[in-house]
Image 1 (cartoon, one colour):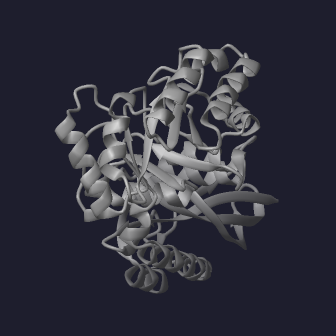
Image 2 (cartoon, rainbow, N blue to C red):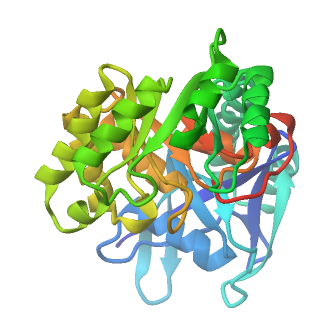
Image 3 (cartoon, rainbow, N blue to C red):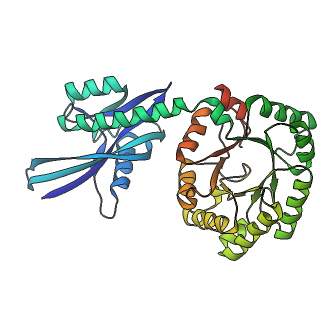
Length: 369
């Protein structure tokens, strides 16, 4: 008889060091979370479900590690040929809550501690999986540390879109962008001319928003806004697509809306804000496809004023849909370096944030965008 299970080597990064989540099973062994595959599930779905059920942790799938095969004897079924597929999974959220009817406990351990526990109190067939996972994790940690703060700063649109923003705050925003080497400042249309004057002669771009924040104006209004912004000194346009048209299934209107702004921008970068918190996965794919067909340069997650901000899952889906041809901008709720790194790893090549200074100086910002 054959049996299929899936599980994961779950890790988190703490102070540039990886920690592994191990569970103590009912037999006094330290092992990896895993469980039987249910009908209709993929191996990946089984692994994430079992990790959540056994430990309380929501995981993000990184990569397949390998599989192990072994046999055991079941009193009722006889000899069972067992296969377990293991994945490398990054812990993203959730509180550690051991499923006590299945396991005795759990804990986070350094790589060295986890390997030692596997050797002394674990299962021999997990040792190879652990070593493969640790080799992959070492590259991830090294990759994060190799991307220095200056490189990340050059990917950030330093943002101030609050309605109560003052002239003095816009001046500070521009000075911060120059000091830290941010890609652009993103301001409301009224402040474009002011920002352009502050940033004249620098490499910092002036980005503004069109159809913001609802996307519910006509394409003619968006075209006027775009032309006016460019005349005042804007060099990048972040437009909100027609969300209602997309939700109504009117993809032609969505494409024409974007295309009108792209044409009005006359070759300047146009980023299309999808407001992913309002969309299903299918709608995110459709929106990305329309943006691509319309000639936009980027797709962007959120305004920061709608429901939900950027998520790793949305960024991954957007990147998968647009491929390497378009940029992906993650915006909304990115307040620290770790979150920015997660978005970049998921496929973002631009970050929209009001907490930009905190991101590049190791702090944690506040606000929704």
